[in-house]
Length: 186
Image (cartoon, rainbow, N blue to C red; front, side, top):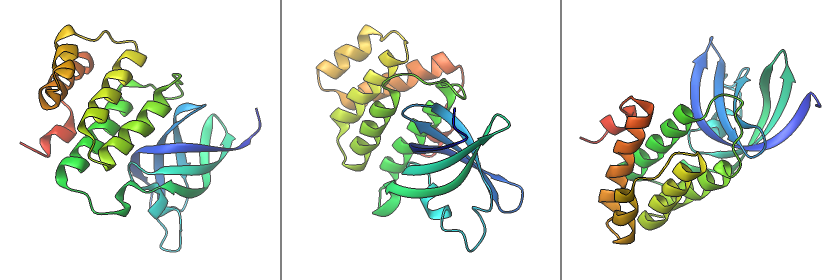
């Protein structure tokens, strides 16, 4: 494998590391979920910080060394927070990113997850409840979790809010932890 590579990725998590660095978790089409170090990304002169916002799709230039990916450059492809969003859109985005981060292990690649994730973020951005729930159902089945009949019946009867609540409960039972993003809205 080449030490240098370029890939698209969705920013699913970011943590501050040392004074001016970031640990950025990306969901990529070919590498799956990877954790990268963005040296100097928090520096005032860095152009990468705005690209590395949660939910953004970026073109990432990576360097692989010592079993770690180093993010040398990033270019924004789709900015989720480019236009104003309401609280429910942000909550759905944070919920989805938290879900992906919990159910996919580091360096795990599952076919179809990146495409479904991109479609899901697009559905959030364009206020398409039906497409959001459909992509969430597709994600659950792609990940290999069985889908309860109750969720399918709510979706088929176009009760998307109830369907999403049942999906949330189902996923919390799988992960055995309440999602932090659900604390944003009572």
